[in-house]
Amino acid sequence: MEENLQSNHPSSIIELLIVNGPSMIDVSDKFLSLLTNFFENREDLVSAIHKIGLLQGYVMVIKRSKSNRYVAIGCDRGGCYRTCSALEEKRKNSASHRIDCPFKILGRRTAEGLWKVEISSLLHNHEPSTDMAGHPYCRLFTKEEALQVEQMSRAGIKPRQILSSLRQSNPDLLAVSRNIYSKTAQFRRESLGGGSIIQALLDELGGAGFSHNVKYDHSGHLTHLFFAHPTSIELTKSYFNVFVMDCTYKTNKYKMPLLEIVGVSSFNTSFYSCFVFMQKEEQQDYQWALEMFSKLLGDVKHPLAIITNRELALMKAIQVAFPMTPNLLCIRHIERNILAHCKAWNRFQIEYKDYDFVLTYIDNTWLPWKGRFVFAWTGQISHFGNNITSRAEGAHGTLKKYLQVSTGALREVKENICLAIQNQFQEIRTQLASEKIRVPQKLCIPFFKEVINKELVMSGRGRGRGQHGLEEDFSGPNAMQDFFMMMTTWGNNMNKVLEE
Image 1: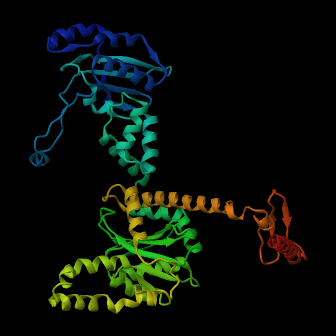
Image 2 (image 1 turned 90 degrees about the horizontal axis):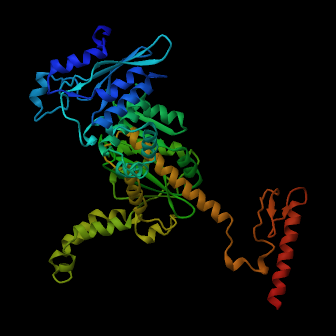
Image 3 (image 1 turned 120 degrees about the horizontal axis):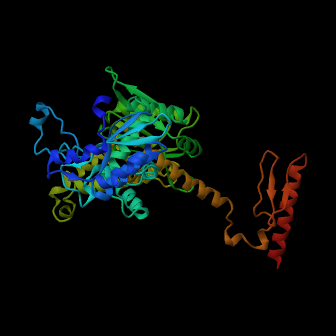
């Protein structure tokens, strides 16, 4: 290889100009000045050549190199387009920016450890570019920009928004959206570490404290994936009374339905409990998913109510996995479906001939499940006012905003789901912490001054903080007695207020 990298002496450049003729463009002025310079490292040498080339309208790129020995730098339009006849037949209107430009400069490391420039050819067989945006090299990101792209893409920011953010700090940025997509794809490949996407996903789930399980078919292909984020596990075990279940679609390139199980917090807000990718929406698929969910809850915890749509396969699976839990049907979907299937309702009020059709539809489709949506029956169940699946639909919408596209791999979908869960958990955590320190204005009166901001553990050991920040200890052998004395004082004050 080194025989092909031998440089010409500077005195031969004039002869080379004469041989190649006037069609060649000489750019020797600035580059000849580098012959007397020495560079501390290879990067400085390459940077100096690259800057001179840009000033002249040419882009210099590394063609070949060997660590700590040499580097060959040429024009980005050097070399020839490589293809094979089989591929060429399939491609139409193919083109290449390579036109075998002869420009070539060498950089060699001296015995003293410095780097020196050697010239092979300073001629170009094409005119300089007036707009450098057409050169792929000029659209590359710096190390700092690449880091920003990685951080923002991990945060779920859309590529066009990433590009706009980078242009705010660098108005001369030549990159386009395609460069963002290429860079994020590079990050994903590097994060795999040479393994498969599924294996990398399972390694991440196992190493990050997720509750997860998988199921394969006889060919070894993954058919089911259950996972719950650590924060989702914490919320699920804290608020396990009511859950809404529904499937959403167009979330991954494998077109696997995604079952979302959404819980209800004490603030009547929704949170993601767990997710299940399934091969199909049949009873056995739902039953496997609910068995995993049951393990997440534990043996002693059964939800007070589960709300679903009229998905018969899911309803049957709930009866098997949670036989003690009532399964309510979404009232809103029932109303929509009745209106959709009974479009002749207005005519029915005028013409009675449609009465049999409407009655038959309602009688066969909905009345068999009346105990799951009619208040006379559902009013006996502690569902805390949750009788529609709009929570799940809202969760679908929120999740798809994080996913951005419907063609991501399961690992990418998981990463975006984690972003949604973490933000959701922080919202609930902030609201819970805020409620702990808030006192309703109607209680901020002397009448309640003895009990405001008091805390008591009913086991007899507790600690309270008074209105002025002084701690009052309710621990020790007389804990309950001290507490009741305080309550007696508060009661006496209440009586005085009432007498006045």
